[in-house]
Amino acid sequence: MELHNKIRFLRLSKNFTQNYMADELGIDGANYGRLERGETGISVDRLKKVAKILGVKTSFLIGDKTNDESEESLKNGEILKEILKEIKTIRTKLTQ
Image 1 (cartoon, rainbow, N blue to C red):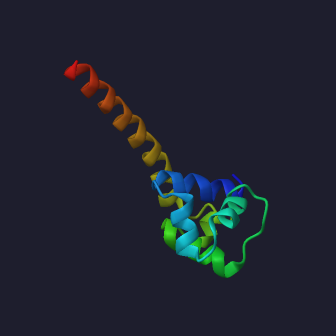
Image 2 (cartoon, helix red, strand yellow):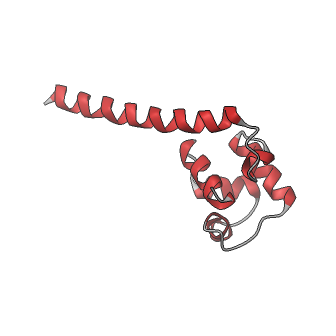
């Protein structure tokens, strides 16, 4: 997975908005959007900040597979989202 896609995926898995990320990084939303679309590069300092905000190692973001725990938590986050969606569906059916 490319860096910008990894950042986007992690951001979404934590339910962070692009504006939140931009504010935390001290950049405007448009620049952050370009970063997530892969239209602009990222400095080492900014990459470190992104990793800290997202709770992963910089090596995980740039492709090192040593952060198995973060990769596993990504999978678990997606599973949890599906479970929560099912719970909402069941609740809706029960209240009808």
